[in-house]
Length: 300
Image (cartoon, rainbow, N blue to C red):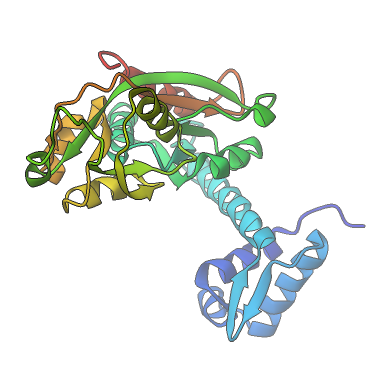
């Protein structure tokens, strides 16, 4: 059995996956459709998996196909980077970092971290993948990502291969439109008050439910979100109050026209940097981890 991967096959597969079909890929690569189809079939034979499934006239990536596509993108990105570094005459070319950001991490906080990174290293390239921690951590464990920023550490099943470091601990506040804030009754607190919350998989949701149970609070949950930005967008429409973290509170109030509700909660959200190696071998992930941790100063 041939154990060496044919990179021509992989390049043709990636073209089909990226362009959404054989016809579009043939126009991009200037090869015939039969040749392209044959190359993809040979790759499927080599890997012993089906990379596409046909739905009508469309080719849809299979689960295995999506995994192969992510690896192929990284392989050719590194190849392009290598060529650029060699042409520039040295090993000082731009570094590419594959960063996972949990959906529950506020987009404004993630943006601040990225902007700070580019201020320090203008040539740094960052490929960002957003998703649930349950999706990002396995990708990190299989080296599809270099580093993950999430609101929870790696699960026990992955603690032998992933390393979690607490980057911050932030206070939490509820915010709402001016109209909705006027209906807030401090004596009742959030009991019966319309709120927007993270989904039950979120560490913050678990903290909120613990706080509600301990204080006999029964809020009116209007909607649940994986995405913190989407939660703020809906809060701006007046549907309910949303929880926001200290580091981005002022930005959220300004951007969405919201107001802080005067309630003391005493709960916190944590931020973790998770990697597949205990000591960073690349400067890019090391810098991202340091900058993410810097946002905890003065918070909590």
